[in-house]
Image: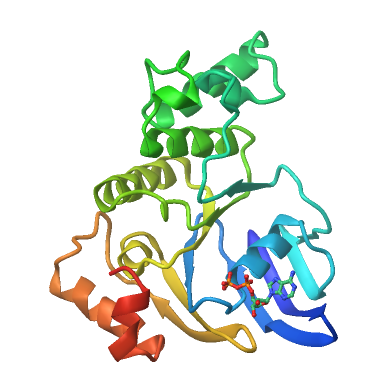
Length: 254
Ligand code: ADP
């Protein structure tokens, strides 16, 4: 059984009498606990795909299923992490994580405390978002998504707005969270090293129409060393799959 199954998804936008073929015959299955990264040029349909999987867009052909159940709208079986943390500035860390659940319920209290421990923010329960660094705020967003035990966490360039040092640190934090929590992850990124550092498989996409160009399994044990020769080999392989070896270094972070 797959946790997430995307079957023959086809998406065409119509605007100003023009058709944009955003996704063409897209097929992908994520095994339980798998970490899959999607990388590809701007306009290859990455955001469209995440929106469809999140249930935010139902105007497409094909089928998306979680644990073999077809999805048609957003649900708590899918968590979503955006590039911005989207925390409520007037709520404390713990209240942001609990969201509409009551912290007076001992079960919720325990879940929130466990989530705060998972993202290593003990001591910051009563802090407000403006008192946190960008990386800490993004960890709160991850805790908020995980508290509902989603089957799949969808991450849309979650660390794209962070500086390089914080980004590396957050990749390590996400790896720890994933190894502890084992949630299935679908990550969209522009960062080739991030994809190689984290993913079991990298899906390289191409644009017009948006489709899978190559699937690269990353057969390295964790934690991965970014400067090892095998890591650098994978970097070369991803760049070649992007088929822009000369230009890719300018448009992708490596
Ligand atoms: P990516 O996230 O990989 O940059 P998108 O999924 O945003 O790609 O877009 C895929 C293609 O669909 C692009 O050509 C984009 O211009 C087009 N597109 C996205 N959203 C819309 C929309 N609402 N209306 C028309 N075209 C769209």
